[in-house]
Length: 413
Image (cartoon, rainbow, N blue to C red; front, side):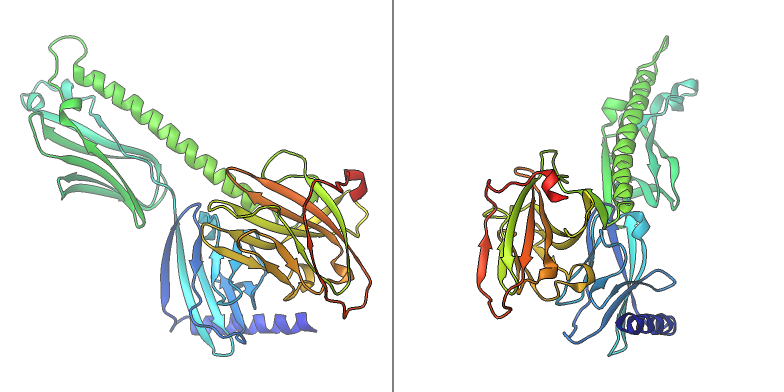
């Protein structure tokens, strides 16, 4: 019945979204590929029903703080309703709309994702010595070049004054902008590439690049041009490799579902075998699963996962139930599969410990903690077996992750 009501609400929201779009004020948000961005909901009340939609068809991605799509990329602030998109890629560009149902209130965000910018390369024009005119002996012909760029502007500056510029909106194999200066010019020149959120600058040293043409053989300018061309190829190749690797990693993350069959001894962040503990709890108790860490470090990323251990396969399906990032001070829990942990999970922001209140027999399963860290990566699994007991017994227990009671892979099946 609840699913039917949710479906009817979603259909009504999609119809209202079309009629309300004309008067809604769109907020533009720009973000660099690979970064995280938060779309702020503003003032909301606890009883408000909030719905986030995406794209021209108003596809529902979050309904009443429950994530429906992109579960490995989205985080919802349970208290404010704000939406965070992590490790964003160009595929996540577009219109995001927040609907606060009871107040018939809308907020619309237009999210634009931009690539990382390469450093522009300045080289001498190799054809400058092909002319026999006197002007070619007095002026130095330069070119500023880039490869594999899009949605950018390339400009030449003399001091702080703009001399020339060129812009592209689509992906371009290469982009170049020429400049001619005198050999004895003492002014400061620079080549700048920019998009709406970032820029890269290369400053020109005329005396290093510009030389008069030699009467015989290869001129110094031609030699410098060859070196400049080689530098352009190396720099372009390095940037292309860096960005391609980053996109490939982001694409791999896009294709990795949130729910997947994972062997229980699989360590996500490092190759060492998973440490598995087996403990028992009684129904109605409050238990705390310890990470064994005294303080989450600034660059650490933490995730708790849960899997139902009542399956008979050698693998089981894990789902994220809590996440934390010390650097951004973002810690949150969700209700788990089927909302089975509704309002019963608490995450300690300092240690990463997970507390389960009023534990139930149906909570029996594997709880996996993963900490991505530059200094001390960690992955541990706790197999919790909940026994039936008087529900009025609410004694609190803390379960330490010691080096004892390790279980083999066969014991987990």
